[in-house]
Image 1 (tube, protein in one colour):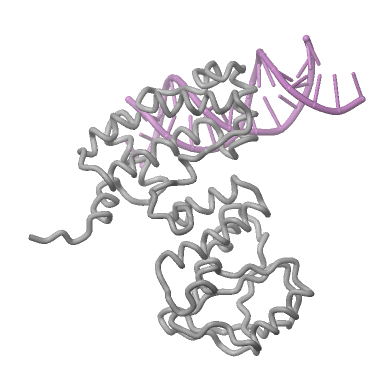
Image 2: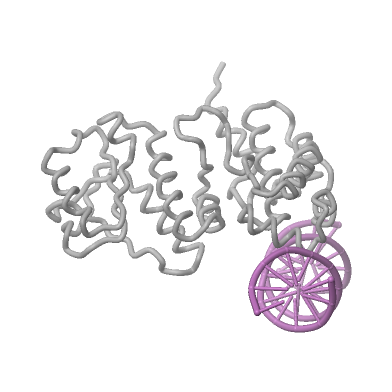
Length: 260
DNA sequence: ACTACCTTCCGCCATT
DNA sequence: CAAATGGCGGAAGGTA
């Protein structure tokens, strides 16, 4: 059983300072469940109360769901608003991959986004230090770089920002690119992207820098200049704030154990 | 670590 | 009237 989705919901509670999600770990008969390290955890019996959302977790190296389980779930659905299955579980049965782990988190983030909006989902993702990757994607696409806006004006501003990432970008300049007053621009930008302008720019820089760290060989200072952080110290602080790690650490982690 | 300064964000209200 | 817009000022957060 993966507990990754649980962490995501807990984190959402944490970042909002709210107890929006009342989380229960349940099993069919109330038997304990094991996590991927084999640790046994107490669980409630399913059906003890009714649930708004049921997330069915995958199990490490274990059998596909039994007909009993399926029948049980079918019944459970009647008192539950929604039931989400981890697709890896269904598609791959016992095969467990790290992709499965992030798939579980993605699933939870999707639910959180529907419940509490884009902003909370993103804050949750950041706190988890998971970067929304597209399912099955080796592609280094990230949600942040795919920021998209509904209106042409905001899209124009985003295009301008991406093009001039290495320059200093102020809200005023962006507003100008969008042909809106700064006030109105901020308002619309936030409504469409779920992030404030400066925050979004910061995220674009972070994503770009992280990509360059992981994929390229440029020195950190060079990357800092290319991505608009200016100097490596500012970039470092920004990384620590949002990823909890320094740029060097991220680079090292992406090129593990190269020995000669 | 402290501080002084700057930008950004956002609620509120007036204006269009 | 409602909806969009713009200005103001304080709080927050980041920089030097």
